[in-house]
Image (cartoon, rainbow, N blue to C red):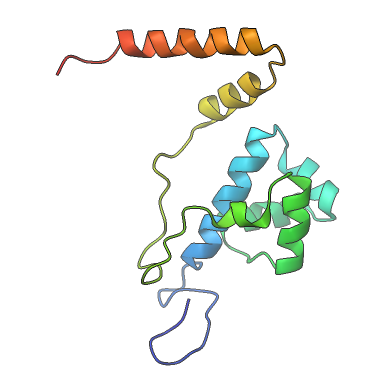
Length: 141
């Protein structure tokens, strides 16, 4: 984050909060780790960290260096750009970026379990079932 006219980059906002981009990157890290079914400890071991460091990255309390982000992306099988998806490009960040929805653990586990189904016909059947159930429960307008 830059301050107007100064050209200096800051690791924290003027109020002392973590930089919103660091928080966003941490949130994307947590999302991907959870979707893969990895604990913080498992991810940490795979990239030579402690689980406490992973916790700090995920909360945005600590910044992830470029080289560390590269290795984390490798461990999570995503391109580095994944961590910056949905960050607004115009005018910088006035506030913490928000995902269209905040996925909860149940949704993440459902997604992970669905993706682990290898039979394409079974996956398609489950997809169609969920779609039909969702349409039955749409409130009347």
